[in-house]
Length: 463
Image 1 (cartoon, helix red, strand yellow):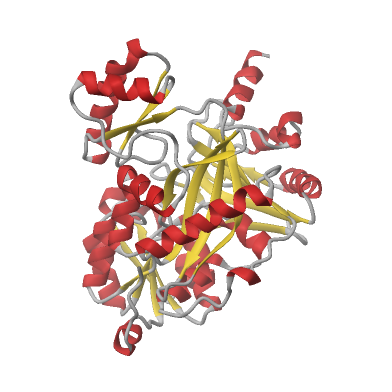
Image 2 (cartoon, one colour):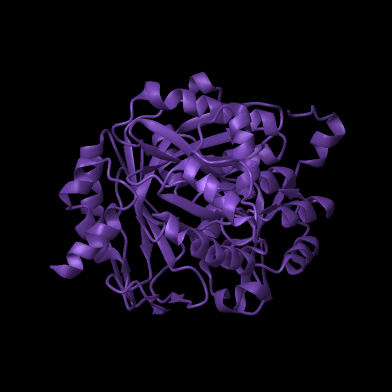
């Protein structure tokens, strides 16, 4: 539970300058939120991002290393040195990179700075999928069938666990994320090979060979619940999102609210998430991710950071999540109580990636021409412009196109028009794929499962 802070602790959390430890569209988004709150900003960059437009509008702009992320955006010492040199009082990690790194959170706080995110202990607990599942069970959050312990080394014991769960099962890395370190096992004969392969992958990718096993749900949807918590024990949830439109566990389109889920079904689950936050003393923004199948929710993980898809929740709730995240980090009390949260209308977000729409290979190069849609209910979060060079060193996401309308059908129509008005030339993008998807009958109906997009792509290639 949350311990009360004295006046000295609260005073120590006040800051007037934020170092943004990230790049791209999320760096521009955080900078805008800081400006609206009257805060100064420090932008950092690698050699590849020296021409980033948000660098020109920051109060300070420092290059902290070479183009490769390991020597720049993942270099904790360089980021802390940049904060010290510029007088920043806080560090906002955005998403990706160091945003869910417990050691970085702790290092920031030990340096006398404020980490705009959860405490290191919360990140560590929720980053370990086994510990997270155990915490959720204690809080009454429904979980996927399977033990809340890591798999033993004894083959016979592993076989017994799989039999008790019932095939198909899924093997997961305890420290995994981003769709890595997972294997589905349809039958007993494939169990031990899958465990051996996943254990080695987990060791190399996450530094730990620990695995766990759960029931594999065959046709679930991916539903998320957004939470916001302050350091005084207050916690609220801001509605829900459907992020089922995925390819290789990477989201392509998100929407809020999740269509076709009754409020009486999702409300008790959401309240259990809020209670879990109170029990572990969680602060800041977070997202509980669930699989939803046959009217039941199953917790899979919690993201202890700002999500890429936060705009759809902002559009439906009317709450600026990034500003609230910064204010909570300053020690302020949440301005909104649960009873004041009202989600209205429907919102979609399309992730526009610099990639070939058929092969999905990244597409680096210079944007020769650019046209982005404008108008009521349309929002574009991006850092690109005509003449901007898309780097091959980082994630392919270059823009997020978001729409909001009174209902899902109108939001769908709004997104079609917005996609038609979007033009990015000089590189390849996934715009043709997004346009085709919003004309697909199955997606238009709503409620598709997490396998729908990959099956849809397979049928398109075969046609």
